[in-house]
Image (cartoon, rainbow, N blue to C red; front, side):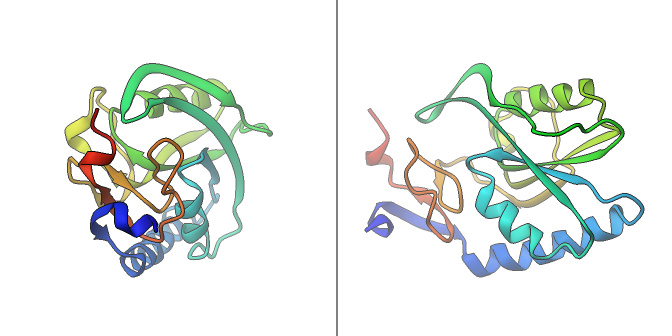
Length: 179
């Protein structure tokens, strides 16, 4: 049923799995001395984080934050922290796991907050990077895929909380979200 709302698939389940395998190896290499705490940004990061973790062979710990700046298809600019970390990150390497980097506002705020909590280092890994949407100069340290300037759904990405369970990333048909 959900598939009928997808205009086209841009990243398949297999492409995502293969890219997560590559990223997992890179993380193992980059963090050989002190593995990072993976901090998933709820809710969109969950499928990406789960797939990524399968391919990291180092001991890792995870935590979650729930932050939002979106209403429907638009960033409203006001970043709200709905759930904070459950643990201390003082002196720790933190790797923020994000589904998509778009405007950059949310990630800039979260990164600043994690440093203020005493993190030794904060880096970003994103499933998708939509550079054309950037309003704040922030870069992901690891990116699975560059994202076209289209409204994407699936593999954690949603439209009003729907479509997160698609096993791929696709473009939502425009007539479903245009007013």
